[in-house]
Image 1 (cartoon, rainbow, N blue to C red):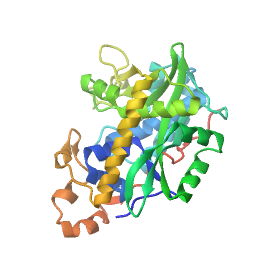
Image 2: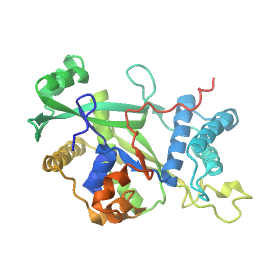
Image 3: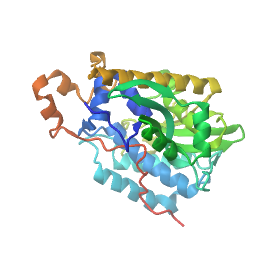
Image 4: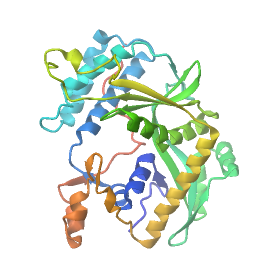
Length: 360
């Protein structure tokens, strides 16, 4: 078992730690062995399509009205390309036509945004910005020992001496493994109440459980932590830009307005807002550090245990259900290398795809 390193550094993101908390063995297979199921997950696929459109919309229209007719061809082309490369499962309703109607409904719901998009230090808008931020270090002596947190002095040294790359090289020469936190922020915005992180979420259903999940998710606190590292001040909080694709109701084929509810008591487009404090960031940093210590503990023992209670969750079976429950241990390596799985190439550091040149 080898620890996965990127140019001598250990890299983690929020989704990998979520997998670790759900099941260390799933984390090991997907993040260390870098294998994932080839099964097409329609919800994730539809959400990815919507992300492409939202990237286009905010790059081209900023917070201003995105007039549908001039942009229709470009957005339709983005969606056609996505579903051509990533077709929905046969018979699933989350298809190209639903996505096109979603784009029209979204732009109609949010014609003019009540915010401005923040700028990066190079003057570009903060839209789908990937980051890789120093977090801590691993002391290495043939096996990992307790992690060393990033001190205030280390952060000052990074700011003064050429950034994180110099910090990493310095640590590697001293026998340490630098640890980086990575992620991708959908939008950073400002309005009359302050600066905010805005994250797009496609949801299977809304309700109190969804709201509670979003209000307690460490993902957005981690993004706020990065926001403060980059801009030098704490954001007011985060906003969840959520939309819910529903199975089409009767007569939707004849009246496309029935596909997406934009008004009423239960609309398919909602935004949830949460204020955060420095205490939230401190707690997130401590919790994340503890989780990384647990990861290294499993590695030092040479095994990542299975949380069998997580084999079946609210969205169905784990992607490795058959591997863990139906395949004999001596055949699992061969099964994992087989056609039911593929290489996990996703990374928050991958450059977001620009599916269509901006309209001028």
